[in-house]
Image 1 (cartoon, rainbow, N blue to C red):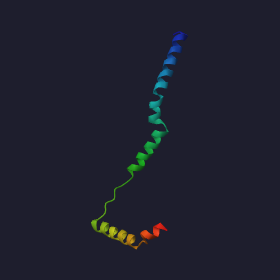
Image 2: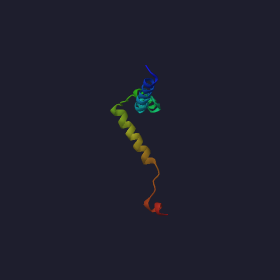
Image 3: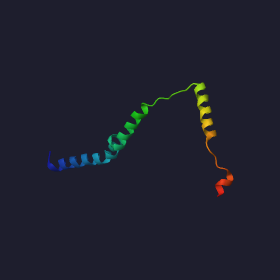
Image 4: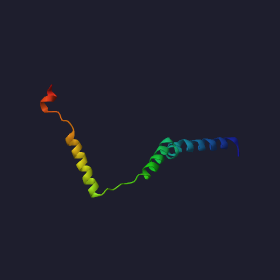
Length: 79
């Protein structure tokens, strides 16, 4: 094999690497790492269901807290 063929082979390999670099970056780059870590964190989440009694009790508690908050009358807002 003569040297011009070796140069063409190296140029062809460099061209293939340059064309495939963005796709490889999406698969192995920093963004891909962040997405994999996010998927791993999300896999650890669990859906917690509550009993109806607990839900009603919570709603009553929140409503009582909201009722006890001070309010501003319409005429007080203008001043």
